[in-house]
Amino acid sequence: MDQSTDECARTVAQAVANERLEGLAVSDESRRIADRYIVGEASAAEVAAQIRERYGIQTP
Image 1: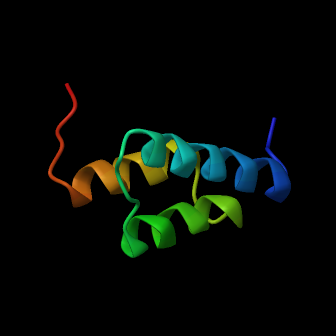
Image 2: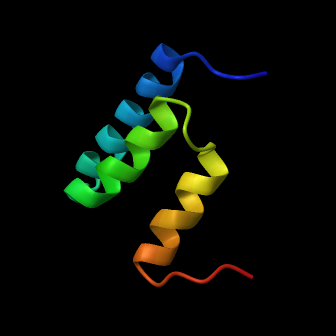
């Protein structure tokens, strides 16, 4: 099931809040990537992969 724009925005807001609780900040570029998820241009998996790639994080 596809998420609505509001649901996607809440998901991203929660992720950003979690980062802040950990004492971290979400970069403008990472936020731009996440915004693509909110508007339905990319899936959550695609956004996660792009952000991992941006930071050089490899997954098995």
